[in-house]
Amino acid sequence: MTDEKRIRIFIGIPAYSSVPGETLEDYCRFMFHIGRRNTEFDFFVGIKTKSEQFRARNSLVEAALQVGADYLFMLDDDHVIDWKGSQGPSDAYDIVKKLVAHKKPIVGALYYHRGGDCLSVLMKEGKDGGFYYMRDDEITGGLQEVAVQGGGCMLIDMNVFSRIRSPWFEPEFKYGTDVQICQKAREQGYTVWCDTSIVIGHVKSTREVVTPENRFRVIAENKGSVKDRSGGLNMPLMARNAMNLYRLDAEEYLGLTFDEMGTMAATYGVTRQENFHTFENPEDYYRSLGPEQLARQVHFHHTEELIQQMDAFLKIIDTSQPGYGMDFGCGSSPLGFEVALRGHQMDFIDLDGAPAYEFTKWRAKKRDIADRCGWEWKGPYDYILAMDSIEHLKDWKPIIDRMADSLKDNGCILTNYMLNNDFMNSEHINMDKKAVTAHLTSRGIYPLNEVVWIKRNLGFMDKKPTSDSAA
Image 1 (tube, one colour):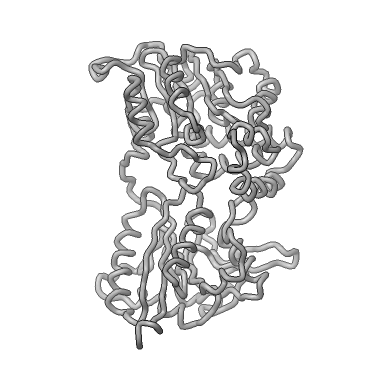
Image 2 (cartoon, rainbow, N blue to C red):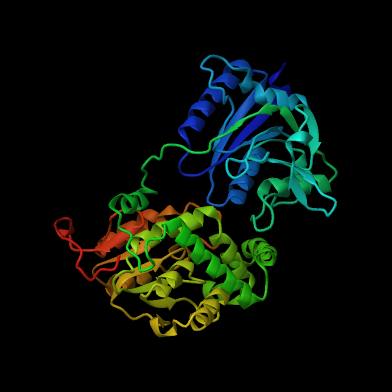
């Protein structure tokens, strides 16, 4: 077989910042196997950081197109192909060869959800047009046509993307990326299949590795630093309860259900990429957004990753004692508003007229906490929240300077900016983390970790926070 006729396969893996050791070992062995034993193919590998899954998947399609791939083989970062754990050569790693041999537009392997009832990640279409997970008795143990194949293990003929309009994957407000691509393919006349004789594993839990991105949460958990007036409820539950209240208020404010907000949010996700650069002043852009901005924020903050992130920040802020904070670029402010509900004084700073900010003002009156909510930048503050905001600033240095000047000694900036790896978002016009870090330290704001930045003198390591610090 000549090089011109060799089938090109791009292996694409959307990945979070940490991957289970079981998956790493398995995928290393998989790569070694296909390199040694599947020599009839040319393989390419791409791993894309998954801040939002649809962006990572679109990047993988683009990379596959760039190398002229014939097939894109999508794998998630939490699977095990040879789940039986054999240490020698394993036929399980012939998975790509087996799937290519079917010559189907979209085909994948069977795997199961790792939570709840461990349902198969395969769907059929119901009479009402919706989708439902296939029962065990509907799975044949062979090649069978389905409505939706799980995106965690999916081989896609690249010709499919020639008939589906970009963006191929969109924000997951109504449907996940696997449902989206299968539905779009079927609308273009393609069929979707699963070889249910091929079953791969799904990692449920692993030993946690301390990283720069999670150690602030680990520190809080190890030290038992959570102090709250609510009587000792576990924090993940408290974060979820806070998000439920946030969702209910947004539903009342917009007069929409959560699912209806998802449909509206999808409009925001599609149009913002096109519209953002048409505005000379980003502030005018944000003020021009309609209720879809709030709908987008509500759905974004209800992702599991953001709920866990909120949980971690709530463990840092001690609401058992008085505190005065500011939420900069607050938008709909799920975190800052929850802290205000728990008793802290909070100044909410954003653009007057921006839809999400107007919702926060309305919410303060509804929840009867207007007396502890301010709308002007004052201080001095015990802490400043900068959640999903610094990356949106064109002229960011004066803002950080003002933050530094507004903090009490030993006060802190709490931010998820350093955790943000979404470089493809057109609204993220400031992603120079090294420059931001250098400027923070030049103003005497030093990192305890990636999310906690403390205002101290150069000799701060020998000092302890003052007793009136609330974070």
